[in-house]
Length: 336
Image 1 (tube, rainbow, N blue to C red):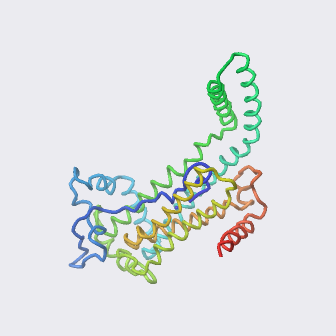
Image 2 (cartoon, rainbow, N blue to C red):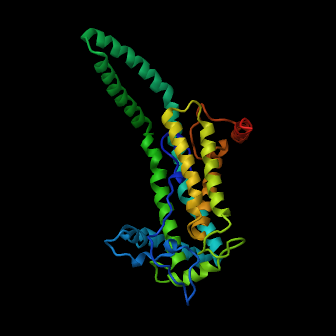
Image 3 (tube, helix red, strand yellow):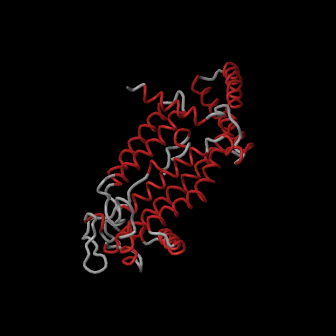
């Protein structure tokens, strides 16, 4: 779940992901006397937690309207398509990414492109303003501190007016974050509810379907992926997204460098987290990350950017994929 915003303004979404893990309780029994293959803490039923207890906040989340909506969406996709559960999870993830996050990501790039195109004008304003403030400071005998504060105050106002004029305030580029993260959490909790038979009237029947709704090396979507293929794949794809953005930035500030290292650490941390949740959640995370990677590659395409009416910028390339491959090859070959 990662976008170009991570290194320009804010850290990527998918990088802030947190596993929806329940409190330590007794494991939930599925239909009959079948015991869940999950650890005790992962298979616990949130409904058994007292509202005022340590798990009260998670119980409220697991039974909230958005999570119930995510459950209904998954059930609807499964019923309407007749696909096995692994296919329903894949299809739902693709649909949400294509219908929700892709348009928002295109809008994000549109805003960031307009902001980038304003930089020459902002630099020109800053240069002239600095000269005017210096002259006024000499005339009125201002101290360096007063002159600096006056300069910054006026510059912020002038830049804000430019953003209003071009309708491209950078905060608008964060709308993807405020939609993508909650959607990711709600879907993850909904799948956990299904996998543990919790917080749903049909929970146990869905849990039984998930137990046989997997494919390949993870036939049981309620169990952990003992091979670690899904968790490792999630971490690798997220790291690849981070490296793609890091290669785009030349001369990053210290803050941006720290953010990049932080996102890398979170991407690595996602591997053990994904190894301790049901395979249904790990599969969703993998599909979401893969769609995020595909989405970001698509948004590098000059034709697609033109289709989305994203303004051309000085940093745009006519051969983005060739440049990306060359940068990746140069980076990793230099470490040998």
